[in-house]
Length: 83
Image (cartoon, rainbow, N blue to C red; front, side):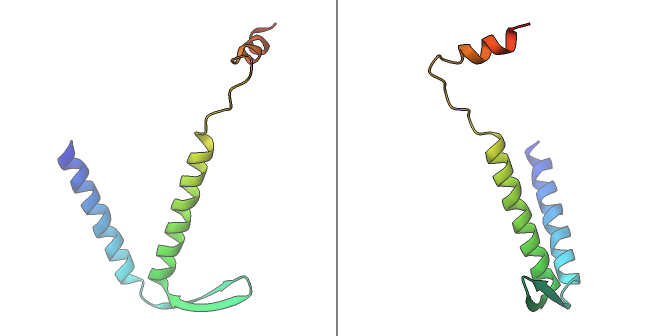
């Protein structure tokens, strides 16, 4: 199991490195009325990091614990179980 995980991580890193090396051409990016010219690989890394950040934030917001009620949650249970 551990060997499979290691091989998978190495394979993903290798694919990412290939993608980054093949996309070194400069591209012009327009963001909030600002024009920036950067290598496409840097833009790909930035978009990846933004996506990971949004995913982590969404995961955190979805997994938050709900606040305890004064009645220990009995009111919510009564409301769920009523006909």
